[in-house]
Image (cartoon, rainbow, N blue to C red; front, side, top):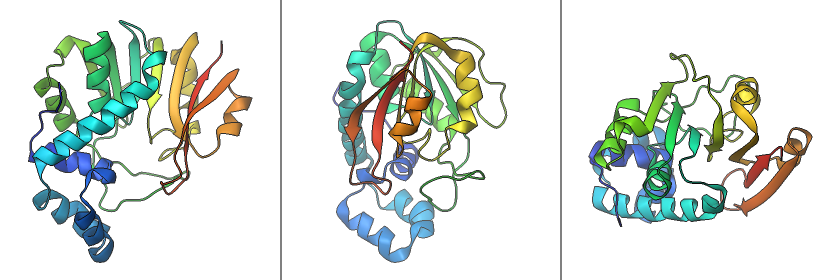
Length: 228
């Protein structure tokens, strides 16, 4: 597998979630014309879905290889704010894991960075997420999708929780803190990006920094946390 199968709508969604997938000329147009025009027009008509697919696959492969050593065959995984699910597709294909997605189901008109108590930003479409998973040969019984704003969240224990550039990056950790305590086992591993890794040393027994990103707005760090 060297590429993802995606249509123009899904490619647009991927670009809204991961601006680094855009070509430099399109990034300049976004900066010049504004993020609203970028979200509603430029990202729809001026992208090349074939190039987006290849770039997205390469990016997700790097993310997979970074966290691979924390994964096991047949893990039950919770993914919070996954985007269109490229990382989760690679996890499933390599390790036959079951993935539970928790997502918000709308696309904000403007792109914001950071969070506060009232952050309502989201960039996803759950129908397109489902289509992307199925189109890339993930079986229906290997994933479940939950709308954070409408569905009762799953009440089960997970082996691993992953939330790249979402939990404590776009949404404050405390929004999920009580829920995570319910679904984590002592050996559960949680992987996410944050600007305040030292804060989590107060919550978890072990906090390991596995990536530092100095090119994003928040200068974030990726942490792996556990209680064992």
